[in-house]
Amino acid sequence: MGGDGNRAYGHKSFSRSRSHFRDRITADGRDGWPVAAGRYRLVVSRACPWASRAVISRRLLGLEDALSMAVADPIQDDRSWRFTLDPDGRDPVLGIRYLGEAYDRRETGYPGGVSVPAVVDVDSGKLVTNDYQQLTLDLATEWTALHREGAPDLYPAARRDEIDEVMAGVYEDVNNGVYRAGFATHQEEYEKACTGVFERLEMIAERLAGQRYLVGDTLTEADIRLFTTLVRFDPVYHGHFKCNRWKLAEDPVLWAYARDLFQTPGFGDTVDFDHIKRHYYQVHTGINPTGIVPLGPDLASWLSPHHREELGGRPFGDGTPPGPVPEGERVAPAGRPV
Image 1 (cartoon, rainbow, N blue to C red):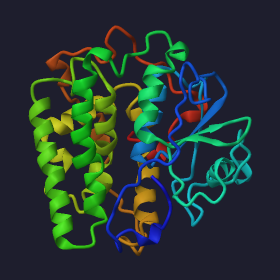
Image 2 (cartoon, rainbow, N blue to C red):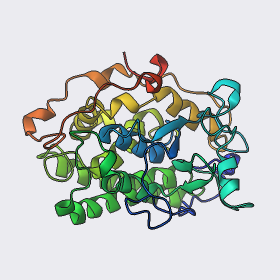
Image 3 (cartoon, helix red, strand yellow):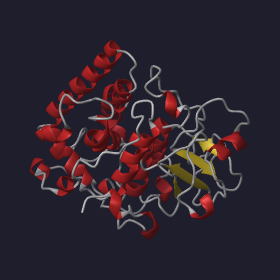
């Protein structure tokens, strides 16, 4: 999610750009970026669903010590993502005020927006990749030497074709569909996108009615990608993006599925509802010019029983849940249900 032209949202048709910097960090270092503990820093916003995929994957796989993480302020300015949550407004590892500085070190005068997630090479301060689609797949498959003991296999080889197929539909109609609806500038454009969102959600609900997870009986990358949209649905997409045929909390299957994931270590403990709401409602002034942030919905229901365990399934396969959230990475009380 980038910060380029925030005021333009709602005034021009939405089109998601492909990631410009698509180098990969791999076990064999074939792109010049070998996997190495401590070499890279993951820059995220807890507001951004695309970045949140990487936050969840990193935690599930136990990469916290190997891949440090910087959290940007959810409120961007005209230079996009900034480190104003840190002392002196600088990231303590990279020493920069704006993520855009790492982009500039990689390519001077880069014409695109500054987006998260982004991985930066600590020594050179250069951006390595902002390829949100590939990043989490590589964390699951290329970083295996640094995974924690008991880490789940989030992209199992035997299931990849099915996972890819499910993720493609989720991306087109749900992950990206809510944006096409929210930033539509014409009625027909909005109605087409919004219809697609709910048609796909209804198909997913049918799939999940009889199985706990999207593919197989364990958590996979597909669940991570759906979750990051579902957890934002009622707080943001239902009202702010006008995806309001029904609320997530009104669909018994999807609401139970989302709560099941939220209550699974590695998912809900990475979610910051405060960052999410303030970013969308205060940054997208093209569709919310007053910048008023709604009070609801009530977050307590995310912790209510979901009964999805009755469907069976093994969340972490042959592995184990991640341990406690590291001290410096815990979500502040304002951003989580109590």
